[in-house]
Image (cartoon, rainbow, N blue to C red):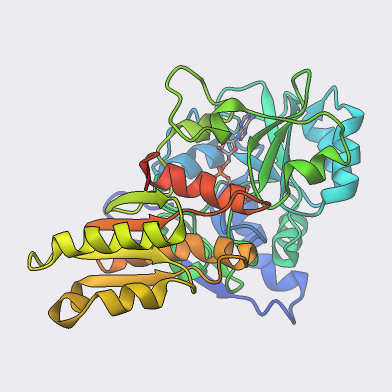
Length: 367
Ligand code: TXA
Ligand code: MG
């Protein structure tokens, strides 16, 4: 880590995911064994990794992110059997879910084994565990020979990172290395399921849906706080991280829902209110609507209005994979106001809407 007064630039290790060997990650593995921090790609988002069983490494993760230390980390493993070393009282459901969805974008919460330090679990007696499907991530866990605690590799509060460039943007000099394996595949964080209560409960929606989970463990419920359209002040989110403002771009983000025609009309009306003031405005559009906005914005104004399409509305996976990158682009152009369309809540659309609502601080208007 950085010594007082010293500026350290993070080392970037580029890995060709089509053609690499585990030993290409030997320096990264060594750093992790020494308690240092290495960011790496996973199929969901980039993770900021440290040795999960080393409390000093966990503390460094919180420091590097500027993250509150009551917000627990996810422990990444390379073999299903590893859960037996870090969790206790493991229900059959855990093995059934692991069998079906691991390696992959599912995090399972279990009672923790005492070898997992409180620093890693934010003081909780439970531990979040996931086996990523990304080959680089799994090779890194094996090569380092440690379990890797990894939150998303963004500065606390900012959109999660989906490329190594974004990791550098947020964390350069604050971590020892980033492994650049190119853009991630999914672009939204893993689904989190808690198996420590009476009924399996989804604490964070993600690529793996409630329906998919229910096909394996028949009764699955959502934590109330994650499906709500309004911020529930009197409901405590079971995933501590879900209570913080997250993913937020610097500008003020408002989501509009309603019939497409009404939504575009209202967004155009809002942009026109900013005409002449040289206020930088962003529009989070779709392939179906971006031209409508472009035509409405003319002359000098077009310089101040940034229209970004997330992709075709029905292409939920594409929309999901572009969301965080687009939110970051609005920061790059210093958008002061951002107007977003809302998204359907089918499949991964639910996770898209969950992240967008949090990014907007639940500021959603029906038109
Ligand atoms: O896809 C992902 O899960 C990514 C990649 C890097 O694997 N990681 C990630 O970590 O999203 P992070 O730290 O940004 O989000 C972890 C979430 C937080 O909301 C945290 O509160 C929750 O998981 N969490 C972790 N351990 C928990 C526990 N024991 N009980 C309840 N919630 C927990
Ligand atoms: Mg995060």
